[in-house]
Image 1: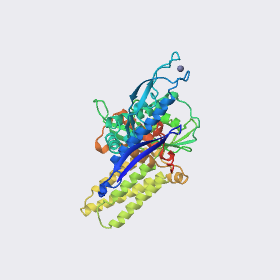
Image 2: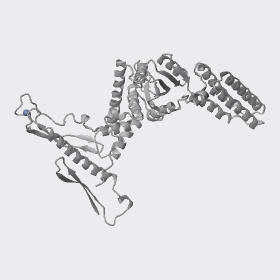
Image 3: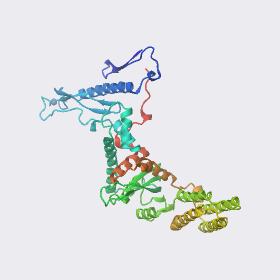
Image 4: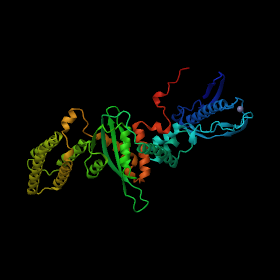
Length: 465
Ligand SMILES: [Zn+2]
């Protein structure tokens, strides 16, 4: 069997032309699984010739339209034809395009190349968008390999180009932020309230010099206002002493003004606590993120299961559990004294449990673990006492009390892409540019920077013939 794929083109003038895009052939009796359907290779060939035809005809029309002299309207003479390279998602195409002589009648007229400036970088915005989007989601090598495996052969699909293109988009985003820092303009529609969730992570740094840091601190977060859905941001900790200005520029962009009430939710670990203190002006409401408190209680709860089995184990475990839940409940309701008492009872109970275990000569290492965790929880809560609130009440009133979503931003933007496990090492600039691109992708803004704004939904359905 043979299938001939032809395409009919109808020009502006109504003239029709037909082009054969490709032929698919299958032996009559050779229906083996691998012969069923059109395969990737065939479809790539057909798509490439489809692209070649469409681009060729589009450019031809464009050049003809621009052939007339803008001064007197005379058709200009063709100087020569040249093949131009254009990388697209459907393969590299090499359409021919003319160069025109200057107009004979008009003084000061110059020769021209009508497609100069039409496609910067000799690639379509769609290819740039796809490549940057993949490069922001997976390693540059993997992204390049995917493009090579799935697309018809097109230029620039190696890992170095992929990295350069992601970096270039990151630079554009960074320039925009720099510009906003300099401009320092006030928000047009100031937000009344702004919720800022902040969290941090570390990735391995690339050490070229001895003075380079072994790890880079990544500050990530999410900004929400009453009108705008959450926007993620990532700042590589003080790369150039401008982290604070960067955050402020981002907040201004979201509509923060001097009247805006800030509510900052963050982890209360030492570094994060002092950083948040430095970054904000002190008028904001700072809250210790419930997520980080709950996580600590959970860890202690889990280690209870490994306590040694002693006499009345079930009853004891039940009592430990009761005290621990009570402490958690008290913290949830902002009852600091109550939490203190419940944790003290919890500690006593576990202590008695251990003494009993020693009497029965059973292992007691799990007690040490619980004590360490309990101490840690205690000093964590004490250090952040000022930022504890009545979580239950706030939660019922619909106010955010947890940055679990920010935590997932950490995972979305840092953990996965930065490949902690694969021993990737990052320069501050490399990390920041990648994370800018990645945030833009997660925020749905990437198209603004790649020049590719067509989303799937805005492409019209194919018109039935
Ligand atoms: Zn002229």
